[in-house]
Image (cartoon, rainbow, N blue to C red; front, side, top):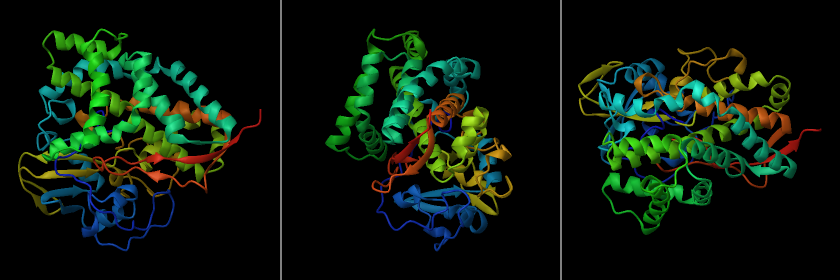
Length: 427
């Protein structure tokens, strides 16, 4: 999961035309190089979302406080670790109220404190650890099946099914509805497009409206009906009936918890599999030492986090790096760039899980630190452990190249499809 539960989107962002991507450094350790200038970094460029890594050192070194635009809306972009951390730890200056939504993601204290307290106990590490056996059972079934087949799309065949099943169980969504949500995942992009259209003040397409109606109808029906199986969702409905939440807030919570509860961890599992395709010996090491899966996942989180950017809005004029950002300015914090800042760690472009660099910003920092970080870590770690027991090698499928995730809020980073070939481990 991303910052808070998952980082929010912006009313100013709209899909732009793609262009050739920069020289890639997304596989850790690859030589860097960028033929562009800092001004070429565009928040709404799908090709940069798919492959942003060559830009990050360029921004940190030459334009750590970049003023850019999306459409006609100005944005300020912070890329250095020191500046990103300072903004995250100063919510009075860098507010989360970038949208008028009545939701946790877009609130500041004291409302943020009240809303977060309603669900926080469900995400305590002690509570999350109780799910380990269920996660392992589901992962064994999914990964055992694809290992025997010798190939799969990691995203659709493993990551989505695992994460949707687990967050649905945590929420208390009935099995029949879980299957309906899995079947309707193809509507997720349309669901997001509908929300984006509303926040940009434009009319959504009929397809986007249909996607929104499909998913919101399933979740809304559970909120309004009696077909719940306990869980976090029942607690939220109790808060709704007691007047502590409006229905709008309750639905916003349900949508965020369900969406972020599977999408960002899906990206994390996909990104982990992608890293493994370039590190053929690590699966054997994890098979022999299951504890090594944890620092491996932390290094994936540092080098290939599911969320790269989160938005803030300034409440006052503030000076950073000799640049003055005015009050009311929209600011984008580049978490993934901060994670690779040489001021933060030595050899930041090198993937090295033995260094155990856990103090990264993949889950944000401060009052909006991701609520679901323990769940995301546990699911990804168990999935990796189970994969190491079933699979000895993972490679990209040369006949079916991966598809980077694009569009939406342009914050996310991962794959919409990741076809791979699997070598089953000898019994």
